[in-house]
Image (tube, rainbow, N blue to C red; front, side, top):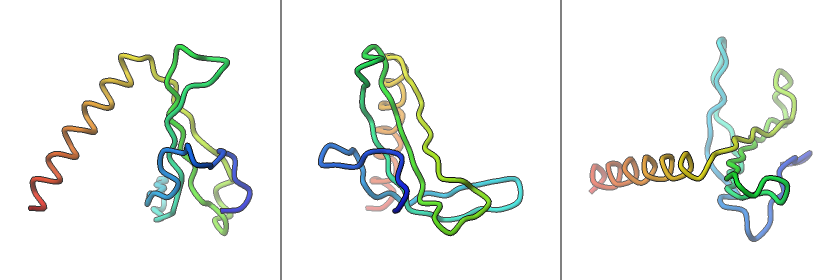
Amino acid sequence: MSNRILSVNAYTTLDLVSARLETHDDSLSLDGVLNVATEDECPDRVILGIELDTVGVDAVPAHADRIELTPDQAEAVAESLQNYAEDVRSASH
């Protein structure tokens, strides 16, 4: 993934994820990076960052999206992810 915006290193949460970019007119399957962290400038927030590999997708400029979550919001997302992961795991066995 050239022209990367998010830093990817040994501490990156998921350095390769399958993702789908959806617009009103199209849907594209792309690889991406997903990271969860805090930032020095905003230590009271959990930062969820995602960047998709849009190389070769002229309609979408290189960019990364970041969502700032309060600790309560981060815990709600974590709980929801855990519940859905358990549902998927149960359905696949």
